[in-house]
Image (cartoon, rainbow, N blue to C red):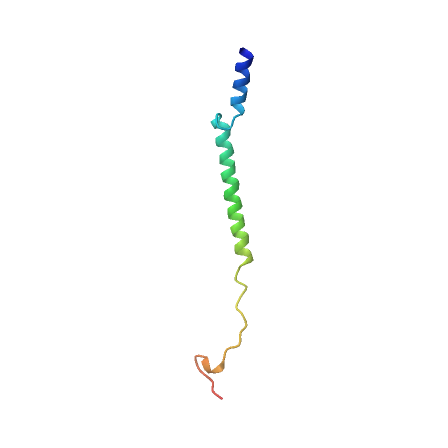
Length: 70
């Protein structure tokens, strides 16, 4: 009977739902990992879609602030 109780005690210590210390530590590290992955993914996405600079486009001379007519 003592061996059976030791087996149950050992199994309960390894059980995720029974041992709140192990499960809370695991959930904390999972939250940290997910938050870090989310932040790094957002930074990477912002870096790839960043503003490349002022485009060089042709503007019609008649639509400028001081229009130039031919």
